[in-house]
Length: 141
Image (cartoon, rainbow, N blue to C red; front, side, top):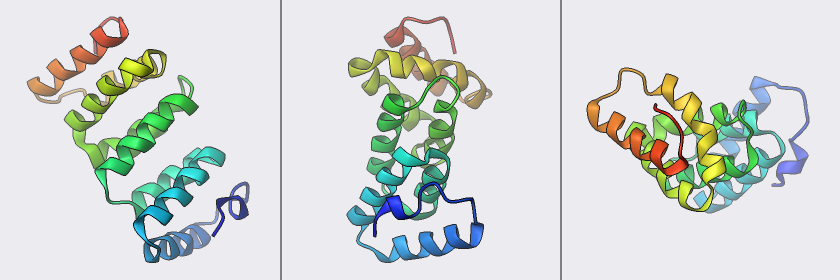
């Protein structure tokens, strides 16, 4: 299967459902590779497929780090929304702190959205969020 055969077509939930079913039948690494290629060409649908198919937290960490490279200030929200349920608030923030070491500009894009996504979370999550803010040199979350 080649992701380029699916990218750029109009959204069709039946086709997306069938593609997700086929991807779940593939070996995990092959499905992951397909989805990474899909995300590069069509992030919105690719991230939806990732949530439907992938199960490994490590895959979602990689997807999030890729998003820091690919996304802009408005589209990084899609990567965060995809990865938050899989990594959890603490895992998401910790992954962003790690990524900030090599990509502070990418990690900085997330600070605005995290303020909304992490509202009402526990004190440890808030403290971890402040570490991210310090790592990228911004205000507060």
